[in-house]
Image (cartoon, rainbow, N blue to C red; front, side):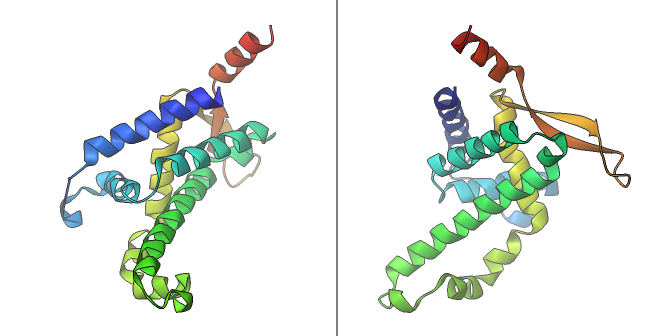
Length: 178
């Protein structure tokens, strides 16, 4: 099932890439709600599809193993996935810049971040969360995950959105182990 899901995710990501190839916009002309798509298209020009698929399937396995629904809180998962994706994007940019330099042994990731603070500052927590939500939408589109509103165990939060595995997994298990 994971191999099949991997292929489905790769196809969705590649379709997203093809749809957004060559689109050059002034970021200020893009509606706020469309900015995650814009930034994701920039990221996907640099970050490998197999990396995105691997973090998504890795997060899927974590969700399966979390016994408590609250551990699968959408806000936390969106943030984790968005941050991982953005950090990998930064590292890819850094690696490319490092390869161009003759003094590579002296050029650190921290130094790259200081030199590219304008890029770093674009990817706020809000943008990272929204990129993570976009990634999870791909998992929902291939019917691996669904979002459910549940009662929270914390008094300060009466209800929270959590990610749950869909029936697709149970059906797969029933086919494999009748």
